[in-house]
Image (cartoon, rainbow, N blue to C red; front, side, top):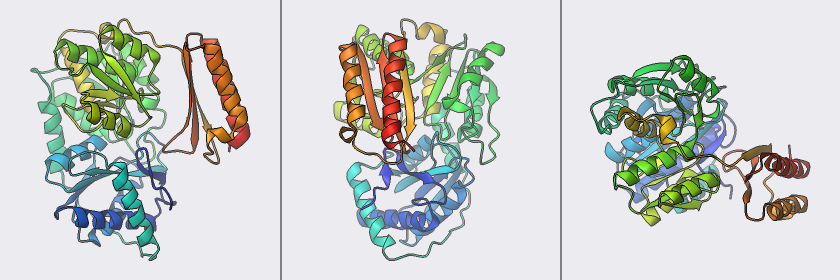
Length: 445
């Protein structure tokens, strides 16, 4: 049976399997059938980012849901965590976000949240995959259901974010926002305006194709430069669906998710709100984060890559804070998933109290780390690539425990990711390059 779900929903090129019209319709029907069998009747909240394919995918999915007597409410362009919030708090039976996150515009995806606001667990995804295959065998004819925008959902989400601010306002701050031409383009400026913040807004004119293009959290350089040019307090760069955020301090130095985790852990620890004294991160987080947290009396525990695995470990251990270097940060006291706007708000709170981001990140120096993405034609098990395994073993022997080597396949793209981290930048680049070349020679496109 084909595997539809990756580490973050169903991804692909819009219009091509598994995001062709017939399969999207079938996914909607499979989800509607599962909801009918496992839950009381109720509406599903649908949302999308700014990709040109978002609307037809939403309307095709809605038709599939309706075929199983499952009603839909359409929130329009909204962030992924916005859909999670509405699924949990607005009486929805489920939430579906049409987005491919940080991917280019021609990609898209389907992210599904339960009525509790959490992404579906693996057993439910497997059951949905079985239902999808059974329905596809019947060769259903795809249909489309016109959707009318319900603006109340977006307003409810903005009100929730506004209420999370723990003091009067942020009037002392000037913040540069890079909205990635995505879902945050309207919401982020509106939120900070409500909180009294002065803003300089970049990349907030989406045209359906410019989402994530040379901007946002994957390309924060322009945001960082604008912070310096405008003498701003800091900068925030989101990705296409705004479930992640990357920062820049007033000196224009970029700060990733690891540093955000450290800053928030320190703040929560100082407020006696980090109980247990534990932060959950992935195998991709820098060793410097682990050491800095240890100095604060906080344990770092690692999971596989993917915010769903971070969340799973948080729920199992009772940890209140977790995330990834990419800028996914989960604060369980506030939300059920990573939320770039909420993470930004939590950091801005600290700045509103008089701190500077450059001071909050003090004492943190990341180990040199090199990540190389290799596009592959197949995801063959690494043990079947002897040349690659040999180079990995050689690198690990060379570092003798003072560095890390991680090679894995992306859960959402046809990529092998090579990560090498150690104290010597030249050696890091050498070993990462050698391993990547071996992968390219064996299975590269």
